[in-house]
Image 1 (cartoon, one colour):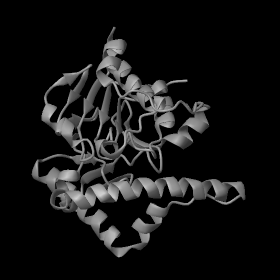
Image 2 (cartoon, rainbow, N blue to C red; image 1 turned 90 degrees about the horizontal axis):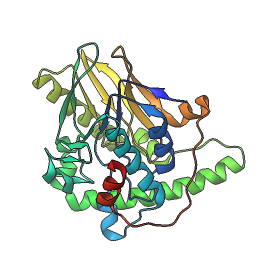
Image 3 (cartoon, rainbow, N blue to C red; image 1 turned 90 degrees about the vertical axis):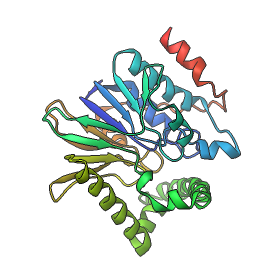
Image 4 (spheres, rainbow, N blue to C red; image 1 turned 45 degrees about the horizontal axis):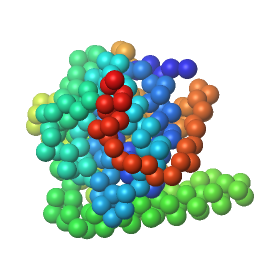
Length: 274
């Protein structure tokens, strides 16, 4: 079973973080066939790995899948975010067929120009309060793990899954205001550059909508959900609930229980490219 698209946009996979949905992402990348693959920031959570490296085999599988896409001829672009900002110094370089860029411009099959950016550059909290952002990332990781335990208990008694952070984003006025300001800042940047739209990540809130003639697309994340933005052959964009899609297509997710393994990306690149 293959999932055929012209372009796939993925953001906020946060490999190296305990909450990362690496098994699901690996299964998705295994079955996807596309001409272009954009990793729209926070692919590797270097912030989380500064305190303790968490790198199970499933995270290596994801990296290998990406590198195999590049080897097969997929145009792969990695746009670092705030959690992997140390990679930004290598912008313009090619790593195992993966091009690193601060931002990119993508042209769809029907001629639309889209600005591709992680989005943290337009987040004043990240830019002016780095310590608070790092602390928030640490707290979010713990919240996600607690949320998964709660959802295991809820599903065991027949209740639907429930997201702590989604509830906060919907009910807390400050969070709603932040997301709205973030969206407006990115739309303004797209308009300033004469683009038809913008594709981003960062706030872990998937979205795809037209705002006064300019497209706003947020890829979502691979922590609380498994979401991706895809472009079909005719240029049509679609926001995909990957977990639901894989169930519908009968794609099996294999959960790798292997303990932490060495974090050796260069060695894996050599292995895949051989």
